[in-house]
Structure formats: structure tokens, C-alpha cells
Length: 468
Image (cartoon, rainbow, N blue to C red):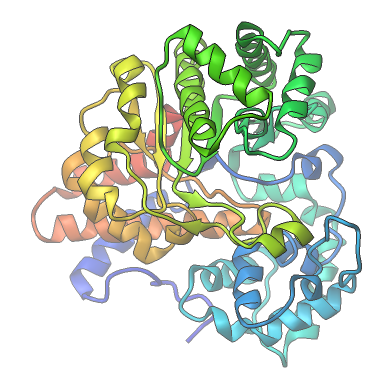
């Protein structure tokens, strides 16, 4: 079998496969809209060559290194930096050999699809990755990376990316985004407002972060009113550089709608470091509602990524810091948790709140019914562990009958691995076409409707959900 099967992810049954092929042919070359991800804006500001294949594929990608860690490979052997600056592997070839020697672990996973696609389609590699081909493929990719047409901006244009949103801390100076704007390059790279560090009382250095927010905005963030105004000003600064969305990574979907004086008291308790676990959770919930109110004011789409127990391993967090592959799904309630927010702003027709989950049990029971009636809600695509062919198909089947597709937000790749972006969109488009082909084959929709829906799932829904 070739490295990339042209019929990958299409139905095995001949008639339905032919329908999927026809639908896919119409949208395969559509532009990529990437409204949520974690690519580094410095890549596009400086446009420097990527250093080597290992630092492009392995070191930044927790989908790759968590699998290797599960088989006993330490993060230090994969070049993942330590927070104390301690010793970690720096030889890109050694990291690549280790990755290639364990590549069999990825059989049947979406990561295998993404890496195979990037090697074949982006770098022209014809051999399958493995221990015997590791050095040859490393040299082939490294040779390409030294060429001007493989620098970040050139790849951005080649991938057909119309817009790419990064995820940026509320305290970021946004210097890289300003440099992109000033460079005159035509690529559209925009920030996304991620205020977790100044919203979560349990985030390390919370009080200092809030004080830094005050200095950055010229607001008195020791007061509740000044703190809220500081958020408004930072959101405006992000919007001035093209941002259309905010993002919130909370362990739960809890929201609150406290009276202003009660919210102010809770804020003071958190700022003084006196909040217990319940009070910290209540404050995060109150801030989701406050952020939603601000989105009504300024039109920014709000994303809620709930249900992840982040940084589950204490030792890994201590040695390597956040976002090192140890985010674990947990049960998540949306019906009761979102009610205070929805009572406050859920009927706002222009508000867009995109909901993500790592608890698939709530797709048909909670999320689809909620998005199927509240004007403000849209369902985000399958996220993290479910950003996979099977996860995408389950999502369509579990939500499509209740919410339809027009209460969803299309696809986003949510990645730090730049060269996987075309691959991830290719997978999503193929799965959507396979799902639509099944609806055509059993007579639930016509072929013309399927063509329109395929276009909507590819670009239309995301363009509207994120106001792109």
C-alpha cells in the first residue's frame, strides 16, 4: 500500500465511497481557515528557517511525545526543555532516530496520518518512516528546510492558509504580531485572547499576574471595576491586531452570575490568596460570564475548552512546566454549569460561544440539545483526544440529528505542529465527506444538499462562527 492511500478514510462500500470521492473533490483545494491553534507567531515574524526535523515535528508536539513517554521514553531524551534549564537532548538527529525507532507505536492513530501526510505532501518523502530510514529521511527533510520555499511564510502560502489564529496570554506584549503587521507580508496571522493566567486564582502567580495586567493597561486592578476595565482594554488591544476570539481553558464549565458587590468580594478574596477550592472555581465561573458579557459588547467569539484535568502529572509539571501531554479528560456537566451564563446572555443572537468537550458522553445528551436551542451557542469540533477520524465521525453522528451542522463551528486544527495543519484539515474534510456520503446513500439528503453542506463544513461555518 502506498504511504498515502488516495481513498483513506472513505467508506469501504463502493457506491458510498464514490459519493465521498465526488464531494471531497469539490472541497479538497478550499482555503484553510485556522481559527484556533498554538503555532508560535515568532515563526512568521522572523521567518527564520526551522532548525531541524526533530524541532519541527517532535519537540513541540505533545501528540508525539506523550505516546513515546507512555512507552518509557523520558521527555529529556526528546529534547523537551526543562523549566530549570537542566540537561536535555539537543542533538536533533538523535531525537529523530528515537522517534523513528518508535514510529510503530502510532499505527492506527491520527498522528500517523498527520506525520505521513506532512512527510509525503510537504517534503516529498517517498519512503515509510522507521529505524532503517530515519537518517535518510532526516537528511532529506533537513535539506528541504534549508531552502527558502520551506521557510514559515512560504509554507503558510503554499498550504493555502487564509487565516491562522495563535493563542496568546493576556499579558503578552504581542510584539511578534506587531512585527508581522509591520513587515508588509500578506499572510493573515491573528492573536486570540487567552486570559487564564489572570482569571484563575489557582494559576501560579495569580496576584502578580493581575498586578501586571494593571501595569499593562493603566488600570487599578486591585479594584473589581478596574480589573474588568483592564480586560476590556486588553481585548481591544488584541482586536487592533486582528483578533476575533477569546479562549478559556477551565477544568469545569461552571459559570456564575453574581451581583456586582458579591463578585467584588469574591475577587478580593482571590486576590488576597484566601480563596479555597470552591471559591476559586466560583470566581472562574463568574469570569466566564463576565467574558461573555464583554463579547456581547465587542463582538469577539468566545471559546470554552472545559473538561480537561490539565498537567495531571505533578513531577512532569515541576520539571517541564505546562502543556506537556498530561491533560486528561474528566466528566463534565454543561446543562447546570452553563445555566447562569445562559440566563444572562444565552439569547443574544449576535453572541457566539463555541463549546468544546473531552467528555463524549455529553455530545447527544447535553451539548447538541443546548446548541440546538440557544442562539449564542455553537459546538466546537472534536478536541484533543477526539481530533481523530473515529472521534469526528462519532461527533457528527451524535450531534447532527439534534443540532444539525449549522449550530456547529466547522473545523479547527488546534495544533503546535505547523506542518500538520494541511494534514489535519485533510482528515476532517475526508471524514465529513464520508459522513455526508452515508446520508446521501440512505436517502436522507440529496447530492446537491451534500455539496452545499460539505462547503459549509469546510469554510462557511468557521468563517461565520469566528467572524472571519
